[in-house]
Length: 473
Image 1 (cartoon, rainbow, N blue to C red):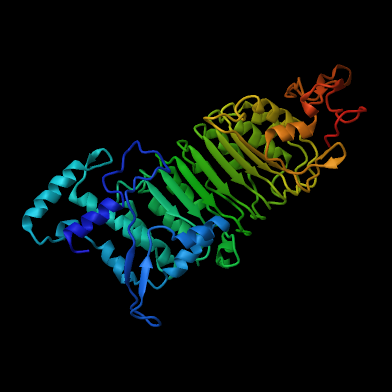
Image 2: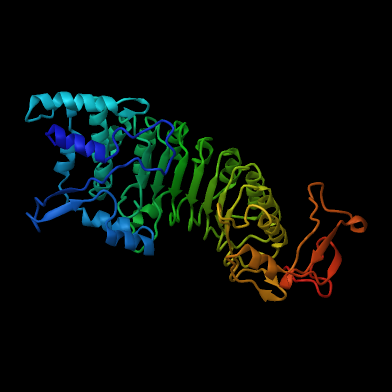
């Protein structure tokens, strides 16, 4: 850490000079990996080697693929004996104070730095120092949490790096002792990270090895002030799965309008009191191209009026290409009318996944079926350039077709065929329920075996009441 050439090689390997103001999120600028190897200083095992890896090992990647989160848990446990004094030395590194064996080489290094560009400006000695310190701080962050140390100094160092565009804190549930304090310190540090483009914060409780303290989190409102300052943020992931005492999300209104990708995991948040702020706020994020919202196990939270709000919000997201919704285990859902209708307006959508497993009171999916049929003729249709993707899970729900319970579908065509109908007219009911004598009609047509066999002119709302019509409830 005192040699100029070693420091320069570490900086280039970790992406020095590749940061751009117009760089897209999820596109790595890294040209290599930087693993740190040293010897243990404490018993047991003093003198044995220990490795701090830049990312997951091959075995840990296999664990992560089989069960999300387990790879990062294994990595943290493997590195728990890495001496913090080595990382602290990296935090104090000053590139201007490093030495070379030949003094003329330092001139070459300065000339080389002049060719690098960071945030559209020439790299400097200070850039190298901040970049390396930020790398060591990010590496030490999880280990500091594991050893119950304050993370404020590490976050301050990360915030000082003007080229820091990405901050990922995966699978922290197994190391957090005081989640409220952690979120408070993180929210304060985010105020200084206005140039951040991607933020991944995973506090989800997804295994028996997770720390039970995360289930005592009551609110994530302390993230709000920090999120408001992230004016360049395009990719945001927040997972609070298993926080069974969480009552208030509190940061939905602070989500930046610049977001292009949003991933919210609130599975098992049984005591979450109100989702209105979140579901209404999604409609303000008009630049979204990818939305994943998982609220499985929120038994008493979601009701039909909540999905009406979500449906109206989705209509505003005209650039949306990927949509994944998980409401499995929600007991108070009966209809999907507004949500089902809204899906058809997403003309850019080519990937759609909906999980309604164990929604035992859900009875009507006719509007959803019609929307999928419309999308199947357009954006959901697979092509060589953009393959369409669709999945629907209705296992053990209250939905029935032809008196049989519906199972999951991974093909839009299979779903429409099994649904057995195609509504050629589906008027909006914004003006209220129609008068009995003037009820609009819906033409229902069987599409089984891809041939039109019969047509029925049936009053709207009476599907399944006439002989030969599919049962939709």
